[in-house]
Length: 565
Ligand SMILES: Nc1ncnc2c1ncn2[C@@H]1O[C@H](COP(=O)(O)OP(=O)(O)OP(=O)(O)O)[C@@H](O)[C@H]1O
Ligand SMILES: [Mg+2]
Image 1: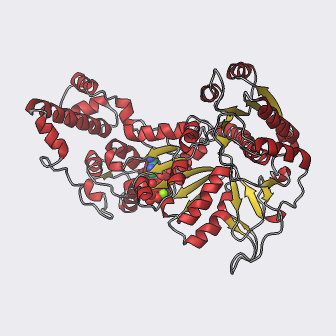
Image 2 (image 1 turned 180 degrees about the vertical axis):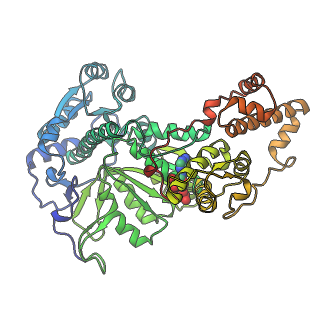
Image 3 (image 1 turned 30 degrees about the horizontal axis):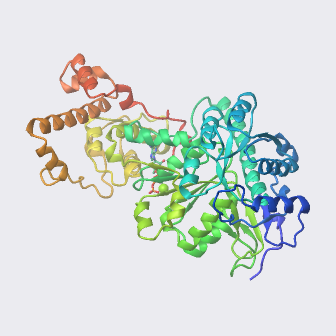
């Protein structure tokens, strides 16, 4: 097996910091780095228990390996360090100033709050354990008033729970004490890289907005409450770099939500790289993800960067994560913790990457953890923010919007823009709403595309025109008497049980009615055979609003932006 020569310049994608475990490689600043490492490795507070040293024992060979991080970039990055321990604060400052960053120091939370009011920072390094205003309080202030700032928490007691709490509260990453100077340099290098990418993305977004107005690059349609909650969460988490774990049935839109998050994130100018963990055998998946060096295995004729390196600055989408083998999960965990990637077959060279992770599965990840298929630590590290996409049958109010959208899209694709667009009749929409949609939005897309090829221009589409593809058995109705819900309804007494059932019926009826009438209340009242005032009163009683039932989350964008099949 051959190992890579140190720093194979031709195969390193821009923006990567190359590292070596080879201690013989001279550091540019040996004296300072050694002194600092010694300092940082010592326990920092009297009564705190001894802590495990971080797993990273690497020596940054030449930090300018972060190629896009020029001295000018570094000089433009403003870092705030908040720590009550003077030695630690000043040692961090001296390393970071030496690297070329602008550094400001604060010893107390209150002082930091004041400094933040009058100054702009790109990165804040905050000790979790501060007197008076705690590190967590300061983190919340930063997230609220400076959402674009990257906050790294220095954690004295790095339990998984406290670290995850910081990530959930909006921290970019955490740095467990004790840490080495190299560890600090690497982490700040990654954070600085993220700042540069964020500046690039915001410039690109401004340019896109000036050319295309406010249209979105990813079309996500749906207004059902459960789906809205998923999208609202996706929109909020997009602004952070927290890992997201998306669950939902096949075809429900998990990958689309991953795209939505990436395009709304500060990484949007870089790649969203997807890898399907179920599609590749273990060895191939490993070399695809981590890359390999020349001679690592038969057929490895040259060094090749993996998808993790390709996604540097951007997002890696791990599709069907639970299918990944345990050894690869262990390697992945290391990348998530330290950002360090080692190519297959390499013993001396590592790359440091700045990647955001989004994982998904259409199974149940908790069960995969219980069954020992998915590492628990990896799962918790990846599901900092969990998002569940509800199945299409649980959001029938989204069906007409989606169906009309796919109809227009596939009509113009297959039949051109001059032939008159057919229209879905009420009966056709009712027929669509009553289907089980086990394949979710993807199945609906396929059904509509199939139909578009056969239908006449300008025709009113009837239920008989809608093809049946795949499994169209109706979803089984829950047993009326045997289910625990029915039992508790019986115990609630006849009148209460009847009122509950009627309220449920009324709500479902009204939801479908308004959707069918496309939000036109006069038409809805006519279909239902009641007057408009009665209809409004009924809707108010159910807390329903016409707009919420018919307005898509995102406005449709030009057809070339539409999802590919
Ligand atoms: N809310 C939506 N609005 C518009 N298009 C959607 C929506 N949800 C899903 N789609 C489209 O449906 C198709 C399937 O979605 P996607 O690939 O995201 O599903 P998935 O959950 O990742 O499925 P699988 O588990 O099979 O990989 C895609 O073409 C996607 O663009
Ligand atoms: Mg998918």
